[in-house]
Length: 326
Ligand SMILES: Cc1ncc(COP(=O)(O)O)c(C=O)c1O
Image 1 (cartoon, rainbow, N blue to C red):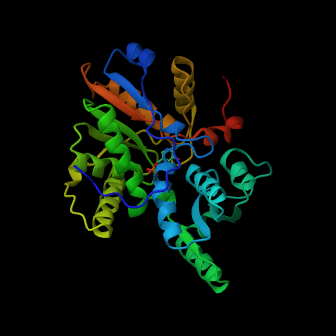
Image 2 (image 1 turned 30 degrees about the horizontal axis):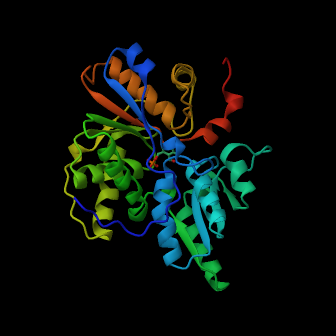
């Protein structure tokens, strides 16, 4: 099917490679496990967010924006990717972050500062009002004859969703015979894009999301509403039933951005077995889920599974003090 994509500014290194995880597949003695290296979409623009931001930036420039405004927790990968993209295209960035300014800047926050982003630190209570705060920033820029473009959490809104619709098409061309695709689920946009892509391009694999916070029911509702919004915004008619949104619950640990020994073990295993570096907030949790579900016989030995490595290395590097016993 030929899809008319909206305008996009190519920034990411695409297509990303698919590699077989030989040692892990052998040790688990289960399905063939492959990994899509979306951690290699760029260096400081690495990870899944840059796919979304290619479409977001095109829309922002169409609106004559001179400033990108976005939000997230203090070590957000999405926020860092946005700040870097803004710098690259001569725009300013204003970042609305949940958390206190730490004494030492690390990981994503360090990079945010390095590329010259303006940062507003908010308490958890203030952060609840981030939407209004970002609207106020756009208003105050307008009064100075400037144009702010506000990007919601994780760039999960109809324009950003196109990033993973395009990724679904890429996957179909690379590996048409897959049985399952596994992705971490945070704000839900990556899953929603893959799901829409599956429908548009007739992909065979089931798309499984592993939630890194909250629970299955929350994400089923959230993803359904992202798809419906996308339908409305782009005058499309993707139809689906809630049962088709497959969320594998139970691997969120203590919740968003929290992690413990189980995630650290998985990160160490993948690093040592495959030279793949995961992060403790998203990909470490999702990989833990995948390994456990293979042990639980959710997948059979004849299947081919693709894990989307959505990035997060700077998130990992911001938490090294919490990761001991290497
Ligand atoms: C490394 C990484 N993986 C996965 C996700 C989740 O993607 P989404 O928010 O599209 O569900 C994020 C989102 O912040 C991320 O930074």
